[in-house]
Length: 221
Image 1 (cartoon, one colour):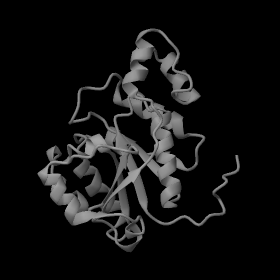
Image 2 (spheres, helix red, strand yellow):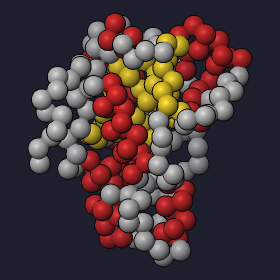
Image 3 (tube, rainbow, N blue to C red):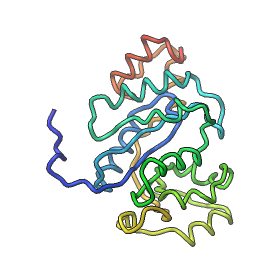
Image 4 (cartoon, rainbow, N blue to C red):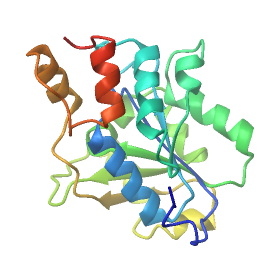
């Protein structure tokens, strides 16, 4: 398959989107692809967590969720899967991932972490969150017309670090927060699990390869 972006020069940055991906769906993939095109980077890495520490236990195992992400991106060269959190013996704390990325990439490569708006609004409850911007930029994905009411702590963080242009990412390796509007597909993992529990098809909500994996492994039924 010919990559229509192959002739475009990609900017050098490591951009990743973590999540439970229980299961990964077309909304996740579309968000990652739009951000890849908006930033002009070679690819966006999708990173499933092993055991999320800020939410309930997933409905499928970490190995199944990793396999589904791998299935979802296998024919998409602009997206990739990073298995590090699932393969790690450590809890899935973001700060551990950021430390590992910096050890691998060095101090000068821009690193950009994609977060949903809901996740960002609880950021001050995450382990060592105040250190994140010493490792990366944070890209907050917002819906058009979003209702953004951060608490006092996050308001202070935004006042100090928020920028409006993605060009800042190429000027320094970390330290900025960008709020970027996308029009996400109205798909949720919760919705997909509920559909499966009723014995209905998830086709067109998830990639065909993921739909097949869910059926073969009898997930969420």
